[in-house]
Length: 220
Image 1 (cartoon, one colour):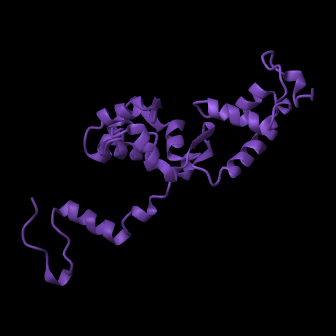
Image 2 (image 1 turned 90 degrees about the vertical axis):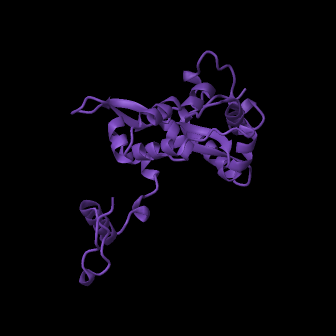
Image 3 (image 1 turned 135 degrees about the vertical axis):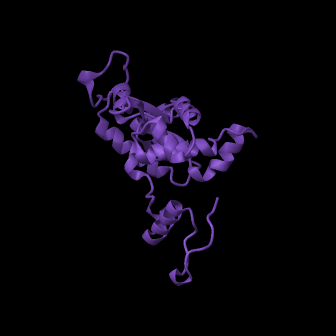
């Protein structure tokens, strides 16, 4: 029998060497990936297989590349490695999983989730202030789904602070919050923002030509 890469630290329940199996380490990794229902880190594989994390990461990277033309992919997320359907096939998978049932987040929940993602940490009240409506219900829904969680308290109000979870990153296909798309392309330019601010403060539409004077009347 060939020697394990970590024979001195082998757990009692590991009475095998990965190289004794057809396909070696790579095939062993695939077998575990198919069986698991959660993301696994290189350390998780290392503990189970008694192999150092370095070779495991290299094998996982190679596997991910080998699946480039398949309907699934080996994705590395904030929580670890996991086999998942490729994003382009989402309509096909959704049709199978939902079978006509709607399981999407509501528009209100999506708004609240986006606010937390980009402005975290923040309280429920702050989310509601930005949306202009109480958001307790949608925040509870996000908490139940595991997309946000409470972490710490606001120094002034002592209200619970909301942050996104690793599950949120996984569902979005992101490794960190730094990978969130920039909001800059969706923000108004400076002139438009100033015009809108003046209009809201005055309660009147912005005059396109100062020489024409202010429009008559105010909007209700």
